Amino acid sequence: MKSFPLSRQIVPAAALFVAIVFTLVGCSGGVGTVSGKVTFKDAPLKGGNVTFAPASGQGPSFTGPINEDGTYSVTGVPAGEYKVCVETEHLKGPAASGTGGKSTPPSVGGSSVAVGAGVPDLSKVKDKSAGKNEMPEGYAGDGLAKIKDNAKRYVKIPGDYATPATSDISVKVTGGSQTFDIPLKAK
Image (cartoon, rainbow, N blue to C red; front, side, top):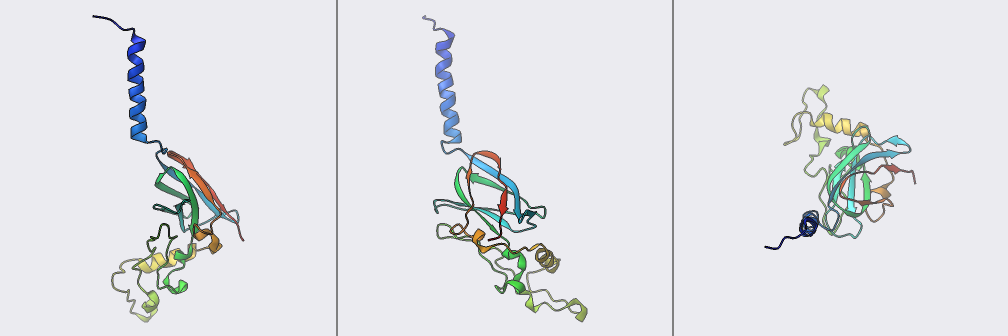
C-alpha cells in the first residue's frame, strides 16, 4: 500500500470544508441584523418604524420599531443594498391622522402591509367622565392608553423619509450584526 504525505490528505479535506461553508452561508453574504439609533435634529426619535426596502425595488422589505430612546433593531435582513425609510405618522392615532387608524408602510414590489390595519375608529369612544367609556368591539384593555402614549411619542418628520422612492438614506447590509445610525435632518 502506498502512503501519501499528510499534507496531500489535508488539502482535499480543507477544500471540501471550504466548499461546504460557502454552500451553507451562500455567496450572497448571509443574513444580518441591523441596529442603531434614529435621531431627528440631533435628538432621539421616540417612536416610529424603520424599514429596509431593497434598492432594486424587488423583494420583501424588513421593518422594526423605534424604541423610546431612539434605538431600533431589524433582524433577518439578507445581505444587499437597501433604501432606509423612517415613518412616525402611525403614532398620531386614528382620530388625529384622519385615516381611520390605517397607514401604509412603503410599497415595494407591488405589495405593502397596512400598519395599524384593523384599528377601530376611536372617534366613537365616549369620555370616561361621562360614566360610559365604550371601547369599539375588538379593542380591549388599555388600548386607549396605548394610543394616547403613542401620540405623546409622535414627532413630525419630513415625509421624504417614509418611502423608498423619496428617502435619500441607503445602506449595504452584510451578514451578521452591524450598527447603522440614522440621523434625520429637517428639509
